[in-house]
Image (cartoon, rainbow, N blue to C red):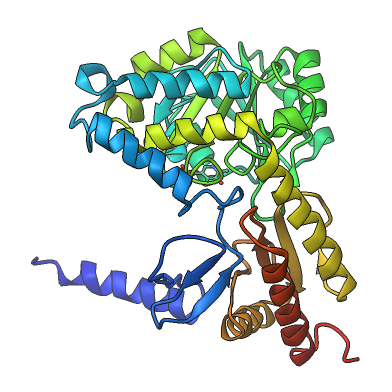
Length: 401
Ligand SMILES: *Cc1c(COP(=O)(O)O)cnc(C)c1O
């Protein structure tokens, strides 16, 4: 406690974040997660900013499955997996994820952040090349940093640039090449062109990896993910994903792929070897979620109906959105202060959503991001659309009638 300049330096940086409008305050909820949440001041808000795509967070069936696993397997293991932290429920969940994703084997992590952080270093070294989309998630970027492989970056979703980088890595004589992309990019709802990526990978002898955090459970006709959506099930080498978004919403992550890959990760992946096992109640609830969504596509169908309805209606009101089909709907406001004012006004009108501006998104691309859920009723979406209309008129974003 003798170095006061350390603390004053931190305070200065925090003050700068605040004055630059980049400080992230935490919204405090006084309720469970859901289509409606209760704010700390007791107001009920319609929630349009959770990754609760299938509506399973805070939902009784998920909780009952968690409670049953809690009862049967206890609260926790106080161990990493390989010492005494593996229960039947963990093995069952790994098998269920493999079956769901169409892979050979799966390894669980405490978070997808850990899955991405621990996937590259055990599998690749300085002889290899990682070819990564420029907008990939922070956890992929950190994972790549921990690995000695050569790094190649291609412009977001740009297949010509990807091919250029594949050629560069080939000419550099790299032994193994792996193309890495988010299946869906969370800021824009952009879906990676996996059919083209797989074709390029085949042409240049590269491996492929996708991060399915914004896709597992609902993308594709039966919700298996972006690889199903793009018709390339069985053609992706490595799939990472989270249990903390659509698949229940508590926490936890996974890496899935060929058995040699998963076995190697179990032996060498540091966030797996040196971190506690996933709580059994989360494993049990995730297993129940997978069983439920493997039996029926009802939830993902409702999510996609809600998405199509909202996308059509918000455009009809005169707002500009990033085109697409994903339940992430960026409503473009372009100007950062307007985006902030808009989100604040929507909050007053009882709608929770988040504004994004530079440097999180490119300069001049400020927006509010709406995320649809299967849990939203048509009635709730109509209330949200009315609020958009009102705030949009007040702030001069859409025309007065
Ligand atoms: C949310 C997210 C993660 C992190 O997932 P956690 O399980 O919360 O650690 C990783 N990658 C992408 C693309 C994400 O959206």
